[in-house]
Image (cartoon, rainbow, N blue to C red; front, top):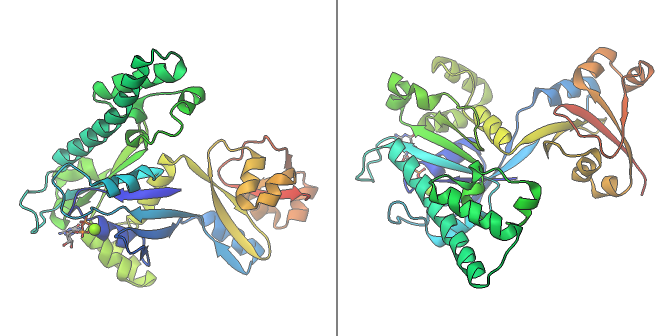
Length: 345
Ligand SMILES: Nc1nc2c(ncn2[C@@H]2O[C@H](COP(=O)(O)OP(=O)(O)O)[C@@H](O)[C@H]2O)c(=O)[nH]1
Ligand SMILES: [Mg+2]
């Protein structure tokens, strides 16, 4: 799962990125990668019971797609677009502070509208070309219908993520990389003054996801300071600022939600671990995320919940109580399932 941090030059992408993914690295082409561990108290609770050699949290890869130099406002250079197209989720960092390097004052609504229009026009250019070609060829069929519907959606000013498509309809768009279909997290990067200003309350409150999009806010400069502190200092600092947690936590939760991810857990004497899985993934495919042999040789899965092992203390006791559920390959795994795969290769 790759989350792309994008936005106009000087909006604070690099700042936000380093605050959220400390220890990130760059590929030397101006693109930075970093993995963020997803905080998950269920891993800690399992570790308290199994006392494993290590605990491993689920990770998501974040990519600073770069701004590709000081481009004209409202136009991303091709190499940045290419990066953006390869992401599973786009995070649009919106400038909510006055940047002395830029002549324009901060205007989050303006940048959100520009970005929105830019994505729509990019997709429209691709789909109109297809439409023209297929009309010339008098082509008919589902692909043509879907393409026409997409064009109509974009012409009405709506991004493609708002268009509901069946699996068959989606398949007709197979290789076409449409950027407005990607889920979108709008991240308002506010100055400290703006952060404290009651007038920005509507930006700060994380919105409920709708049509694959949501928004939240952070204060990039404050988060950078927080990220540089030791864990215990962080707690004090957050408290002094009236923050319950660093912005990276709600940020990761938002990304998880928009990517439609859940976590399943595995445990044993070696490790207790959380694994990100797309919602509605069947057991056998889930097993393949852990190891390809487990998918190939899948026999069955044994499943229980964290609170059940906390009560029973051992898996043997769980089994005796009949709480170790046996599930087949088509069982749809649920968030927080502790999952053991029995397999044979
Ligand atoms: N006041 C303030 N300045 C910020 C904030 N975030 C970034 N900046 C500054 O804005 C400038 C551009 O930030 P940068 O992260 O390089 O932007 P990018 O071009 O989008 O990667 C830098 O001088 C940052 O120090 C913020 O939240 N508040
Ligand atoms: Mg940058």
